[in-house]
Image (cartoon, rainbow, N blue to C red; front, side, top):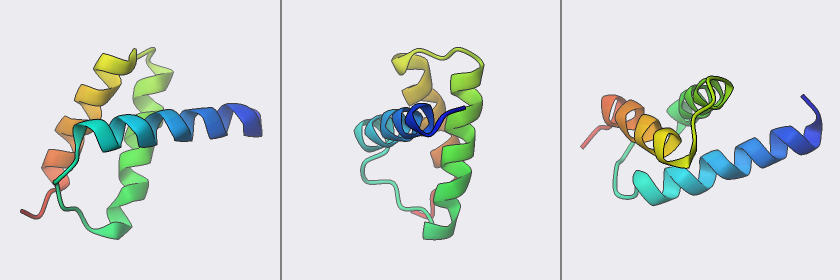
Length: 65
């Protein structure tokens, strides 16, 4: 994966995380886990709706509130 592709994936995960997981409190050290889950979902071919739902489900498992 090129740096440009990596940056595009990071931006996509960040955008969908912000849209779907706003208000959920997680430990700052767990954000890398969220991104790893995002990369896994993208590798499986997830569209934006599936990626957002997957990130939300994963983040809810990590949520502290």
